[in-house]
Image (cartoon, rainbow, N blue to C red; front, side, top):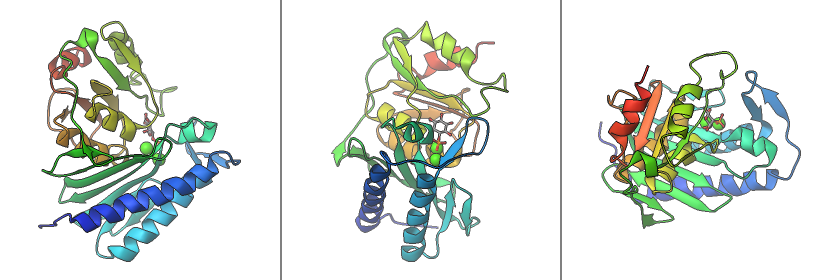
Length: 262
Ligand code: IPD
Ligand code: CA
Ligand code: CA
């Protein structure tokens, strides 16, 4: 199926995330109702408010497209064309008043991501990409860094919500990279991690056990910025898969080697 992502569609999605972002910003200083989905996995009334607004707008303007959105909304999920939405990526930060969180919307057409938009309302930064047409930050073209030595690379990662109960919790890789790279950071928004790698603020990013909404938009932005994205073995990246390794390409093999160490 051929779906052309027009400038109009791009504008619609950018306007939508900006509107919702401003709405959420008003909530940052207000009291949040926090519910726990797991021992450390939380959700606030603002995740739900954001999702309600986004889903309503997408359904109204694109009634034939499916929607997969984090907070238990699936609408025509078997459609070959669907929106993949994280209404608030970085909920733990948001709930604590830490201004590092984003809104992420991607359009998937028969398993390919053709449009990705990630908005950071705190810094008013919109990252976007359309397949084959480059990646942009506030409409300026972006590209990955040129750092080629892992020892000089600034890396970013995250930890899964089962960190307390699973041994497969990424702490081993974190320790390995901490002593081999320039430094490792943990921001708490996977969508932002991918966009920051896309624009060269980070040189490499890895994480496990993410969901499609965490990485759909960011993965296209990273690719369109000239980055390389695979699983830990270098196999093609899958937003429904278990691993992501996203780099400037130059340090990809060096990172793979560490990730595959037993
Ligand atoms: C989380 C963030 C975080 C990542 C978690 C995600 P949420 O998303 O992207 O960086 O480490 O695994 O689940 O729950 O804030 O939408
Ligand atoms: Ca998320
Ligand atoms: Ca979320």
